[in-house]
Length: 210
Ligand code: DX5
Ligand code: ZN
Image (cartoon, rainbow, N blue to C red; front, side, top):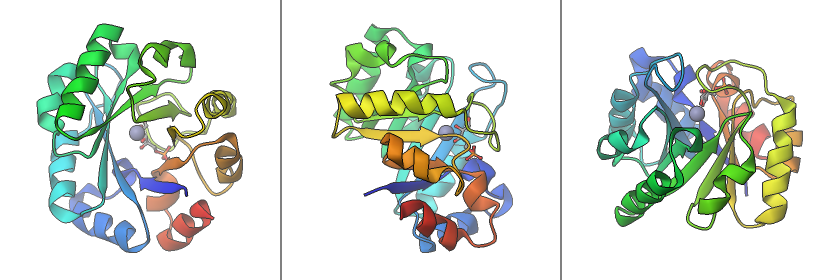
């Protein structure tokens, strides 16, 4: 069963609690929270505030996506999350290992994200330890970009390799491309613009899940 994770980067921050409860009622499974430090990507988000406000307003799974230069330094601040995903490009294998252990000791799922130009080979040393792989379908940093379709090759390859792995995709997912995204093997779909900028969020979520 596919899970739908609205990215609150595209929500109205001024009424974030309403926005979250709206997508919850519309059938969302996760709330995806993008944390950007202005270094790993050219953009900064008030991610920790978003996480706290999300935690106070919903029981949905809080899915935190760390787009930061030094994920290890952020861990203490994101323990309210149910899933924490960090970028493999930001760490070496030893650090990745430590981050995963830290999260698992606190009953938080560990995810690893890869940018469009990063090969799945780079996550092989830790693949057995992680709960989810997040395949970026756009360069991280901004919502509202167009999906880079060639990234779906990596989703296919991972799905062949690991039939039971949670594979999350992030960036440019919408009702036009959701079929090919799911056919490639993704089972957790992040969507910001497609959900929050629609005037029928329930319809979008239901269509994506079909
Ligand atoms: C981009 C973020 C995404 C973003 C997705 O770097 O990781 O989660 O919010 O937004 P859309 O669905 O608009 O591409
Ligand atoms: Zn994200």
